[in-house]
Length: 441
Image (cartoon, rainbow, N blue to C red; front, side, top):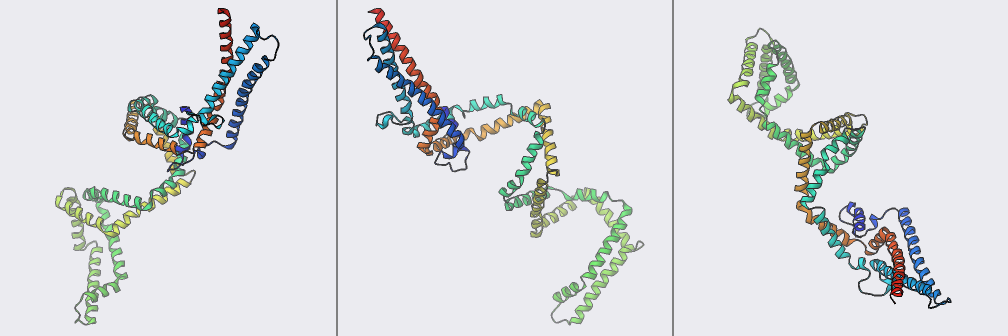
């Protein structure tokens, strides 16, 4: 009976939380249920037909001639015992699921009357015999999860199919995780990583990778870009000078000051663009000296680090870092939607490679199995009482009539064989007892 309860519990436990109050969701399809019902009716009719036949023979034997003879007595004793055994087993089987003949006989309708106790005992049974630490540990060690997973991943088309499943689920997983949380998580991760990164050595290696003769070309391009920006922002420079000058100065003076500043800036840019100009040579020397200091000047390192951290704290920089997740998500979603995309191909190769490594490396298999065992023992064992309580709560909330019907359909056919065996064994015992009494009298 416990086995039947455990089998039927799979349906409700797979449904969404909270647990359903009825077992209806766990019922198999209608065709399977109808087949079970027909099978139960057929075996019930066989058991009842045998019992009725024994009753008919017993009643008819008293109307036959030859009353009191040895063989008639043997027939009557056997059929009488068959009736007793068959009726007793009919009562016992019926009492499991309902009250026989609807009579309020004590200790009948055992399953409906004891649903709470069944739920409690089932929860305790799973907790004690399925979730005990020593049982879980032994079972996990015999499973060899890493070896089986490696063999599966390394065989046939399994990696490609699994990669396809992961890619198909990826958009839904990204939606479930929530953009705001992931955006903030990516921004925090990038910020923390950038704070830990010392930019001075990186900048030094970058500048060292540029040949000295290329500095002139780069400086010329920078001067051209600066000149374009000055031309484009002349009006803005005039406006800034006007805003920051004293209120009593005439606007004509402001315009002359702005033109002077712009002119001085153009003169400086012209000097920097001239290869023979002293300003350009000094700038190049300063740049080379700066490149050397990037390697071994701790004060410069500290200043650059402070500038970097101030820049990272700026709201616009943080906003730009948070938008990185949007680009990552867009790329992942687009690639996941393509059947021949890079994401699926990369996942396939990674999964196949993982399977090959697990098969080839015994130490890796042992390490993975140890991690799995530790995770299960740490994550499952402390919750064993709660899991047992969950099972108890689910079974207790099942609809009693549906539970009884499902159990009867599951084990009812076998119980009818008990009735048949009880009738036949009763007949055999009755005949044996009659023979013994006759032999001893």
